[in-house]
Amino acid sequence: MILVFLAPGFEESEAICPIDILKRASLDVVTVSITDDREVTGAHGITVRADVTLAQLPLCHPEAILLPGGMPGTSNLNACAELKRLIRSADNEGAWLCAICAAPMILGEMGLLDGKKATCYPGFEEHLAGATVGGRVRTDGRVITACGMGAAIEFGLAIVEQLQGREKAEAIKDAILAK
Image 1 (cartoon, rainbow, N blue to C red):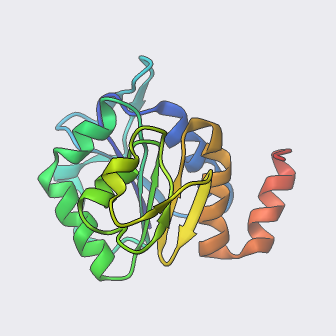
Image 2 (tube, one colour; image 1 turned 30 degrees about the horizontal axis):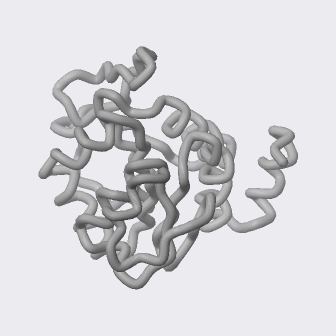
């Protein structure tokens, strides 16, 4: 199961594009609102209905955690102690940690990017202390990061490639006419 965490002010495309790609790969995706309301409004006024709230999330061992960026969405995710506990637990269990745009700052501030290659939205590099920063989409170990909305499709495809192989990712890339 891949858990996609949504916070008020999230960048809509950075959540929806990867979710779409992951579902095309027939992966089990569960969207999780970090608030008590399943309806979460993004940075551009688009409201998405999450599958569950964080309080409703059953105990599980996700294969991956996905954190979309955007502001103030990333700040709201970063302020959620329960989410950080789940990230730490998932990391300890060998889950993939996937973050795009400003959201890699959460992993960076938790020390989960130390010694890794990562990327983020320009201006957030200082939050990735200990990482070698640059590029559009970076995979290092069990961490996948992307620079922003323009890389959302590449980001989703990178996740599929790691979970289901290059052939599956290439098939989806061809089907959606991505470059």
